[in-house]
Each structure stands twice: as C-alpha cells, then as structure tokens.
Length: 339
Ligand code: SF4
Image (cartoon, rainbow, N blue to C red):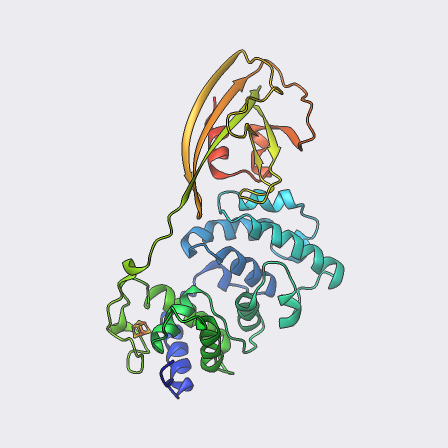
C-alpha cells in the first residue's frame, strides 16, 4: 500500500457534510430508525440493489414492524415475504436470528457488536452498520460501495492477497467518532451515487482534492467474468381445482426451503402421478447469480386433488393462498397465470 492520506478527519468531514446536503434521506429504512429495521434492511441489501429492495422492505415492515410482531412468524411466513427477492438463505437467517433473540435476549434486539456478530447472516460490516446507524456508535463498515470508495481514495491494489485486511484497516482509520450516523450513510450513498463503478462523478465528489484516483477512468470490463454454469430442470406440476401440488425443497443448492413442483431429476419419470386428463408443457429460463436454469414444467390437470405416497414434504396449495408460501419467482408466476 502507498503511504496513506494522513488526514482521516478531512475524509470523514467531507463525507458527512456531503451527506447532509445530498444523502438519500427518503429511503424507507432511514425513517423511524431502530436496530430491528436497520437489521432487516441491511440483510435485504446484501447482494441486492436499493431499488429492488425498497418494495420488499416496505411490505416486510408493514407486516412485521418490530421484533414483537415477527416473534411468532414461521420460516414459511418469512420466506413468503422474500419470494422474488432471491438469496433465500438470508430469509432463513432472519428466522433463525429472531428465534435466538427470543430465547436468549428476551425478544429485545441486541445492542452490542459482539452479540450481533453471533446472529446468523450478520458479519462484521452488517454489525457495524447496525451499531453506527441504529445506536450511533463508531464502528467501521465495508460493504461493496464503501470498498469502492476507500480503495480508490487510497489507490489500493485489489489483486493483493491481503486486500481485505488492508481495506478493513483503512475503513477503521477513516471512520470518525462523531457524527457516525451521517458518516456511515454518507459513505454508502457516495459509493452508490457518485463513486460508481463504471464512471465515477469525481467533479461532484467531496474527496476529489485528496483522492489518489480522482478523475481516472476505470475499465471495469477488465474484470474476467466468471462463466456461469447451466442446469436443466424437469418439473411436474399437478393441478386440480385451482390447487397445485408443491414440495418443499430441502437441498442447499438453490431455492432452499421454497415450495416447488415435483423435481423429476434428469428426466427420470416419476411414478407418483396418475394419468392426467389434460397436460401441457412450458419452458422457461431463469438466471440465478451463479447458474442459469433451463426449466421444463409439465403441468398435469386432474379432476380432483389426490394423495401421493412420498416422504417428501408436500401439500396442495390453493392459488389464492400462494402469497402465504415462499415460492421462486418463475414458479409463482406460472401458477398465478395458469387458467
Ligand atoms: S474522487 Fe472520484 S474516484 Fe475518488 S472517491 Fe471521489 S468519485 Fe471516487
């Protein structure tokens, strides 16, 4: 690492003052702030963009505005609200965490950094965001936006094997004691709206006098894109009188714990279905972060629902009730549009 800018105050004051004039104060999780609400928003914002998160966050908080209201929710209740947001492990972690909070903290949201770090799905940066935004305690964060700002500010070599250690040290050094609420949200917003990945708007940046990368161009195409794998899936979806036979997915590959049609696993025809009176086949593609799914769904229509012999968790779910279950977006869409 080059010698670092000595003046952390100049950095933090620049960010804080910029936030007071330009921060995204209208974001829904910035109103009536609480540890619980910062937690839900930070978990949703892991790996997902702000504009995608906003409607999901509003719906979630409308149903569960605080710990008390979520304390009796089932994992399915939480997965149902997460349906379409992706990375469903996050919803499962919220369920696990709220159960721990109920048992070990008398249903009061933890206020200590070390307690937060013990909850599933909360790492150092998320715990730091909760401590600084909800409790106004000085803790550094290092989400994707913050990484970009401080790595450019100090011109850090991102291919260095110790890069994360260096970035955490820098984030710690640059994080102020005072005005931590404004600083933390300011550095997140600066990364999201000014120091953006493709063409940073350095002219508008409060750090442009001391930033070691100011006015440089960044060729983000240089990054070698990882080739995504492809997976073919063959589902059978039984339907009768607006009810659909769905199975709870119990492997950890993707869509864990969501309700899906019967998975025929590489075209092995299942023998659990009787002959339908009508059938049709639908094909669709769905991109996940690490794999592209090529899905074939055979829809079987029956006069009435029937029992099947299997040890897989399953149930007939009425179309009007599917909002109460966690379903992957493409499956939900097929059911909603099936007539
Ligand atoms: S001056 Fe430019 S590169 Fe440096 S932090 Fe600001 S926007 Fe990013």
